[in-house]
Image 1 (tube, rainbow, N blue to C red):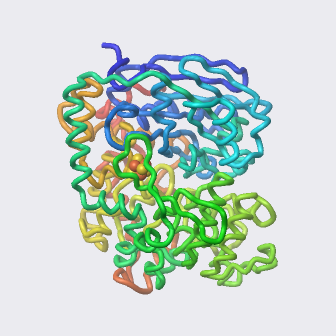
Image 2: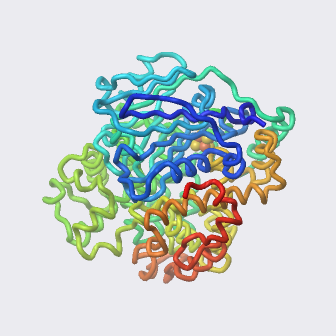
Image 3: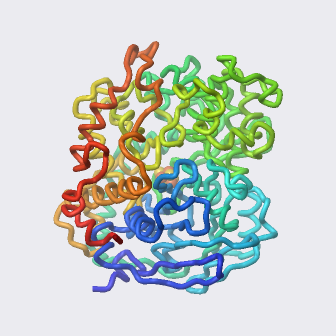
Length: 604
Ligand code: SF4
């Protein structure tokens, strides 16, 4: 049975920037049934088409844009695309997701994936107008900020075109550079640097098609149920009114709010940064990604500068706020704005500045070495100045833009408080205050990641955060659920309103695959997670890399509800490997690969 018309377009667009050639290939039905699409399809392409140990910034590295079977349908919060590649920050598997209006346009244009390889000699723009694809000179936008480049492409190509671009940081291949669609970001892990290394400034895409599903009647019923459940969820309601920042108060109460480079888990000025405070003082409107009833994004207007930002969201408020001891909202807004302007990841930037502030606190770096910046905790001016240095890669910013792990190499003795895993800076939950989060940061294939499990289950009281009992199983279950969501592709936040059952009820009539139960879909998630793991093991990653910084492992938390706690990682990690059918080094066993059917679809 053809895949076209079952949530798929049955087409992968391939672009070689070295030769300037473009062509399309069909999907493989067996692969799609086993891996569904989105992350699954991207992981399969990455594994099969990339030679091991390829430099992430070499022309041979593929940069893969994917959508899922639900993209462009009426399913709620399905307006997101994924970017997959090998991360220049970690050297590991990278998948990063972004909202806005690019995803459904890519599907309407007729593509399930766009795979870009090679590298142009001069800056280029990729133009996709339904089936017409061309590569144009991008010299005129090279050097422009994210906002300038986006505006220029929209004016140049006109009505109906959606864009992704990189900023100046991506052009110079900074490993913290993201890919931006309007002000939405595929931020983590440096996909923007891979795009910059190919000299590709942006993609402009227009699609005039529509998305058909296998059983429209049953599909619409399932979609109606999902919408209804989302509307009824109290957590979704809080996302609607206060954005992701609504959780800051709860995370602080749990003692899991990273403060001053993860030294503690409660910020004394946390009230100033609650969602309610942002809502009252700064947020003037909400915006939604395509087809999203939640509209979690809030737009803040500065009172002292003529700027507005999409955000700041919880992760940004923690990263450049509490983790740097900063409560000055104007400074947080401006740091957020600079990151968006130059095209860098706010979580990594906050992690870098917090690390620098601790080096400064310990007398390991001076203001002179920081181009005259006094990097004191809570200093909003220093936050802004350091963000600007990193964004422009100038002065001390040339070193800082490389990320915490690389900076730490210049400061012997700092490794224990360099808060990163596999080279990726830690997101906004303190591992010592929620043990399952510690496991997820250590294991996640792209490095420290808050989106590969469900940290909020522990924070919101769904599981005792301070025990290791049952945490490996909890992480496994939520991790595999998220892998399905990233294959479908839905927004991560739908998890606060619907379960895998509702996703299953939409996927079957959409694809016609006839999965027998949500459990079978869960197995798709296991297959995808194992495939990403295989990519990493082939690159040389193993249990030695599934670690946490010493601070999380052997520095008892000094205060708060988790006072005295560390993460008992060895125990958690061994149990998790067993549950996944991986050996003691974290390598999936042959038996597991056969059980999951992966052997049948992988290149030797
Ligand atoms: S919940 Fe927020 S991030 Fe997710 S799709 Fe909706 S607006 Fe976009």
